[in-house]
Length: 151
Image 1 (cartoon, helix red, strand yellow):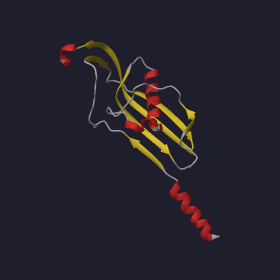
Image 2 (tube, helix red, strand yellow):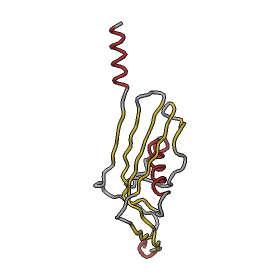
Image 3 (cartoon, one colour):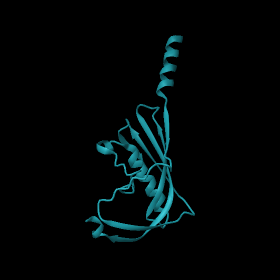
Image 4 (cartoon, one colour):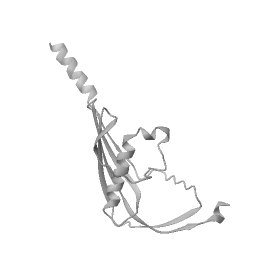
């Protein structure tokens, strides 16, 4: 009986895990623009926007709770996630947090976003992802075509 209890305790100890990932501002900026356009963005450095989002996944696959509105095209450091991006649950929760940060303000762009990602993997049947994003609000002032730069 004691061996079974010890074994059960060890299994519970090693399967209970949680991870937290915090992005840093000192990362390199990798911006890639495919068209010859220049955008002028007015950034308000006096305040920061904050957004929260979460997502619950049954069997770590099927979304059963969380936000259902997302900011389109949200990537960090120009990384598009590669071929496995459709599997990533974190990217969709990050996009929902960015949407929630921008939605309540007059801004159009979240400049220099920092993500705090918390994953709860202790349950083999259910996964919970929580994301907090902070960044500076920005508004697009103008967009100009620069065909001469492309040549």
